[in-house]
Image (tube, rainbow, N blue to C red; front, side):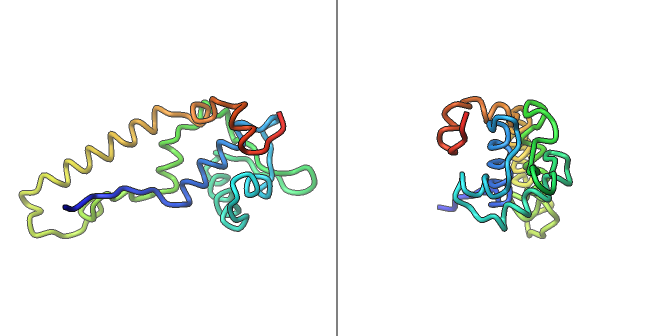
Length: 148
């Protein structure tokens, strides 16, 4: 039995975690070190994540004393689908979605089915905002070690 596995990269996971952290942080500002400590992940990875999120406008970065990261716009306006598309540029569930060759390609229905499945997956993410992910603020703050 062959199981098709769709998996997002660590980059996408860390991006969403960073956005959730910023959404539940009172005052909305945190340092990369704070986010890394809260999740137990590498600051080096989060520096790349912060840079990419900053380029897209999802996060504002402020250097220097009193600096840090903040959401680039309200959490309710940041669609999870947009973040996933930014971090996962091809989203190829199967190779033929990005031009791979296959012996049955002229008669294949798999490509269309996988394209529809990917579209349905992204539609759910498009309907979900970072604010939706951060709704249980009090509990998330506690789990992330954020003082209310």
